[in-house]
Image (cartoon, rainbow over all chains, first blue to last red):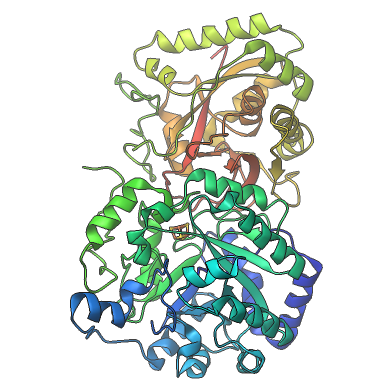
Length: 370
Length: 263
Ligand code: SF4
């Protein structure tokens, strides 16, 4: 599970070629993507929609932010079943239409591991690959050449592949899955061969930015001509038990310096001159399997349920919330101690995440204590 | 516009209390995004302003220091304005200059001078101007900002002033509303004064332990009403850019006030 796609700064020749190719194959989407800058100029937002249709996963990663949403966790820890109504293909079609009407253009299928979803192809069709740019997250386990070609054929444009260490044993341990490093390497070649856009994603835990291993991952990405997307470990999900993973400003600044020499970026990296900072709501929303909308995959507070509240109002709630607000430079859930404390206290022992609108976030939120 | 009563206009940390703002402004701040008072070495500051910006030709460092001190003591002697001195204050000098096109002056003189000052002081870090296409012909002065007075005064002589990032957590419209209710000596900071402050104290936005606020050039208008110009740290680097301000207040955003010597 990663947060998707922010382009590294500077439009390279190959990036320009990819855009031209998209404009030929999918002019409607290319036009919407081009419009994003104009929307920003008008003060409108255009977040990427992460869709968590299912949390099924063949891995059990140490740092997974979705673990607490998984049936396996709810059943094992709380001994209950999640009886909430789950999103279906019709919900996704409606979301696709609402998003399109607002000019939104990008969906990321995530989870869980999307490639274990039996209805993956139907989900892609429900999003509508001719209306939205579709990206899928994957741990790479099932992504051989045949599957990669199939993804391309059904309209997926881009794959975000998780790689957590350049040291094979370390990656496999972090992912709790022997053989997973080799599968990632296979998936990289398969994706490139199939003509999918590819991005590697990796989790930065405290201190990793200084290591030789991290530097060699940056070198690897540069050599392969692939962007390396870095997400910070956050004190949520499985990481709640690993506060030592949470990064400091120094770690974040090390990555900011590496951006000068490598195709490495976070979703806060300036993108073609546009600085976004923390992209909650402005740049990203997550739709959970129960149709709740969270501002970030690591924040378990909902801004509303799409069965009850139109997407437009959900986004407006987020933009007027002082925590999420119009703009902040740091990671709210990874760096702001006060918000982390509030989040930890409110979500502690909660069986059904995210907390509904009104219980986590609300229109009465204040940055101050009183 | 009437001035707000005889209550102190600034809080204990030098933040301007948003009493007159109708547009969004946080009533109080939890002080999460803050600046530290830079140590002002007047000799070094004067030398940088002179070499990077060509400002300070008619006064030396000692005069710069004395004239800045007189501004501060004038503010401190008035109970309503005294607390502004509890916040960050950056003295600067502006060159004598007639500005016909603000964007052109920023592009050709002031922003390159900020770059030179920043990269000269911090050779490992970069100043990046992310604003594509240049500012020439694209930016003007917000009429309510009082900034036109500064530009007019610049055409007559070199100016000594102090930049106060005192309008933290104000939306841009709220900053304009607030400044019209402050005593006449307070001007909303725009491009040239904010640049001069960053040349005087190039490390103003460089913090390694926490995040500094973004500094809006609140007195400047842009071709799109929803957009504004700003300086912002990116890691240890300094950037200039524009972005939508949405008419909203953010904990991370600050506008500045400028007070000139002759008030
Ligand atoms: S809180 Fe903001 S910066 Fe942190 S992971 Fe979420 S979207 Fe990204």
